[in-house]
Amino acid sequence: MRTRFTTSTALSLALIGATLINAPAWADQSGLDATQAVQQSFTPVPDFSKLVKLTSPTVVSVDVHLKLNQTSDDQNAPANGLPPGFPQIPGFPFGFGFGQPQQPQAVEAKGSGFIIDPNGTIVTNNHVVKDARTITVTLSDGRTYPAKVLGTDPKTDLAVLKINAGKPLPYVELGASADVVPGQWVVAMGNPFGLENTVTAGIVSALGRDIGDGPYDRFIQIDAPINEGNSGGPLFNQQGQVIGINTAILSPTGGSVGIGFAIPSDMIKRVVTQLISHGKVVRGYLGVAAQEITPQMAAALGLSTTEPDKDGALVAAISAGSPADKAGLKPGDVITAVNGQTVTNPGDLATDIANVDPNADAKITYLRNGKSQTLSIAVTTMPANPDAGFQQGGQGGDGAATATAPLGLTLAPLDDNARSQLGLGSDASGAVVTAVKPNSPADMAGLQPGDLIVGVGNADIHTPDEAVKAIKDAQHRNHGAVALRIIRQGQALFVGIDVNGGDNGNN
Image 1 (cartoon, rainbow, N blue to C red):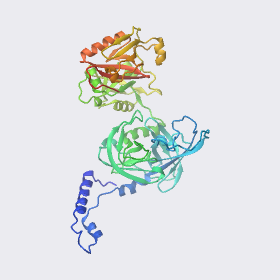
Image 2: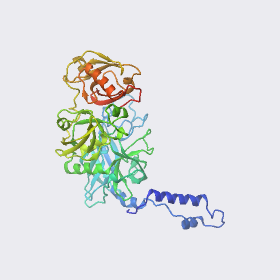
Image 3: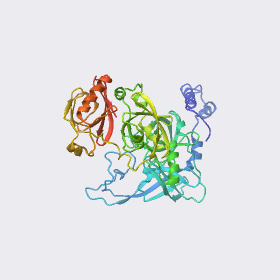
Image 4: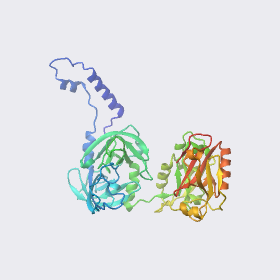
C-alpha cells in the first residue's frame, strides 16, 4: 500500500511496452512460446491491487429506506428513479400515474461510505441519508448493521453515521487534500448502481471546482468513473489515504462521462470533527456578499491587476449590524486575504471565514480606492438566515426621473409603489431602472428594467440625479468604465460597463 509509483514511471513503462509490441524481435520465429517471451522481456505496469486489497474492507454500502410522496413538491423526491443529488435523465419518468394521484410509497436509495475509526464511525454524503427512515450499512464481507446518524451538514453535503459491530473494524485515514495536484493517480471505490466493491481509477483533473452546488464548493475534479451509488465513497491517493469523498458528476445522460467531483479531505476533517462532537457545524460569519472581479470591474474600480478573477473578492453588499458593518468595510472594497491566506475569489473568502472560530479575530486585508488596508474583525456565529440583513440601498429622498444617455438607461426615483413592486423595505432608496436602450452599453452589460442602482463604485446612490452625476464622474475618472452596484431580485451585485465599446461583464 505504501509503494510509490508516479505517472512518469507508468508512462515510461507503457512506452517500453509499446516498443515491444510495435517491433517484436521474435514475431516470426516459429515454435516460440509467446507467453514466455513476454514474461521474460516485458516489465508490467504497476497496478492498484495491493491498495484495493488493503482498503476495500473499509468501504461500505449505505442502504436508505425513506418515504416520499410522489405528488408533493419535495425537491428531493426522485423525478425519474435516480437518488437525490444526481443528474436527472430527461424523458425517463418514475412510474406511470396516468394522471391519477400517486400514493406515498416506500423508496430505497443506495450510496456508499467509508469507516474512519475502529469504533464504526462512517462518513458519507448528506444527500445519501437525507430524509431517511432507516439506514442499513453493509460491510464488504456482507455483514449488515443498523446505523444511526450522528450529524449532517447540508452546506457541504457531508454526514456521519455510527454502527456497532461488537468488535474493532478496519478503517482508513484522511489525508491532506492541500497536497493534491492535478495529474496524480487516484482510486475511487463504492457501489455504483448497487454493484458492491467496485473500483475505478483515474487522475486528478483539476482543483477548487465550484459547480454551484453550495457556498463552500472547492471540489476535486477527477476522471475516474463514478456513477449513481458512488456518492459517499472514498477517493484514495496511492498511499491509501482518503483525499476526497465522491459526491457529484457532470453528465448530460446521468452516467459517467469522465467528469466527477469529490469533496476534499481537508474540508471533511473539519466538518466531521464537529459533527462527531456536537452533531452540527458552527461557522464564522463576517456579513459580506461578494462576487468575482471582471476586467471591466477592475477598470471601473481602478484596480491594477493582470488576473482580475483571481485577485480577490469584491464586496457587493454588507449585512446591517454584522461584524463587517461594525468594522467599517464597505461595498466596493476588495478582500485579498484572511489571516494571511490569499483570497483569489469569493469561494476562498466564504471558506476562509467559515473556518474561523466564532468570536475569534480575523485579520482582513482589503483594497479601497487602490490602497491596501488591514482590519482585525471579531467574527460571530453564522446565523440561521445569513442573507436576511443585507442592506437594500441607503436612505435618502426621491428625485425626478432622469435619462442617462451615455449608458442607455432611463432612471426613476424609488417611491412607495416601486418599493412594493420590487419587494423592498420602506427605508430602501436608489434609482430604479425603468428602461434600457437596445444595444446600448447598459444593454450589453446585462442591465434590466427593475434593477435598483444603489451605488456607483464606492459611492452610495439615493436618487436618479445622484446616479447621473456619479456615473459621469466615474466615466471621466476611469476612461469610460463604470461599476454600478445594483439590487436585482433581492441580491446585491456589481455590474461593469465600458462605454467605449469594450467587452462587458457582470457577476
